[in-house]
Image 1: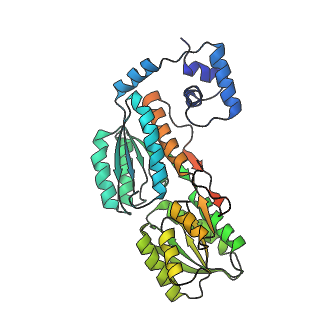
Image 2: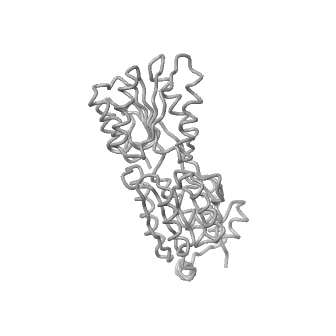
Image 3: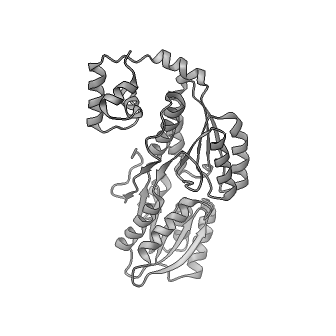
Length: 342
């Protein structure tokens, strides 16, 4: 019987690539997909889904998902994609334990990781970069758990791979975009969820790296919002009170709606506002002329790819092809924004 491994060796590709082509999962370059299909046909490859499903069920694969998604609409599409693919993989016995938190509470993340650790074979997590959380991730890896970080990386940990955007490049993109569409002398404040998030710090660093080289640029400081719209509203109002000269605002994570409401309440829609994610409230604020541009980070693809990587590892025994699966940061303006990018 011809195996996936044999086809992979003959085509000079990985087993994961062959598995995705033959099972219609994920994206493979057209030329590679054509080569794999041609080789499978030439060798008269015939999959045995019933046997594969039975073998997978014997492994009793269980994955835990832990994301700070409560109140953060960006994660709606991430989780929707994850649920969709988890249902597809359920025929192979894959079980998922879903957990969520609100805000950035290291103690709560650690508590949930302790709860999941004895029950799962794999973990998909959007972790804080706080020392206690990193130690828990390392403990999971040491216990034989396959760890995938999603949307926020933890490179200081021993996690197996990361799925999400390049935060540094995203911050640089936001800075360059503001330089192009903003006023000549930019005076900008920044809102972000938490400086305990590695990605949020990276986004801020990239933003400042671009703009601090610009003549006349003034950085009006950063405020943490806990990814909460009410806090974002209050911090934007505070920024306007303390810095009436502000002419730009960068919202580096969630909170764009709260910030926009504060600008409308103060009749300060003259600020050039750049945000992340094209959730419905952001699109509404684009239509109202408050938000000039958003940077899109492919939420559905993130959810799909993370679940696919875990499935390949637990069920097919295929290790990730990459340490990082990076999503493109893409600029969206009112004229090209869509709610169905992935």
